[in-house]
Image (cartoon, rainbow, N blue to C red; front, side, top):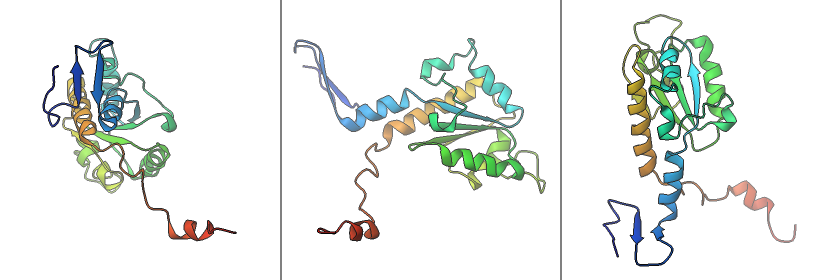
Length: 185
């Protein structure tokens, strides 16, 4: 029987058992599924969007990481890739799309403009998308190369692998809901 320290790996493989059974934790299995099936919501706002499109081409092949399904519907996506300059005029639309995405959701800020406003220090430019929505991975560059986006996706996969997938499932019911469910009413 081959087994390793569970802190390093999340599964145990027993080759002597007929049928090749793998033992794992539910949390590890859910995180493995999440990290290998990321569906990006491309929020291409400026020139970085061209590099985002190039990442999906055959030369860079983003499908190796399970992220080739670009979804333009926020209800079908779980990773928002904000690429380009975010103006205050577009900020409300970006926030609305972010709010429509189901949980769990992650955000990648691609490029200098999405990360910090870039070279635009004006009244019309939001100085970083992290002032509007929480960002999980920052990708530097103006514009960043497709390889940098792939590196950012791999960093996001590492982050997802360490998260607790059962977080928030056993939340305490709200007091108002409990009062409405009293026995006999």
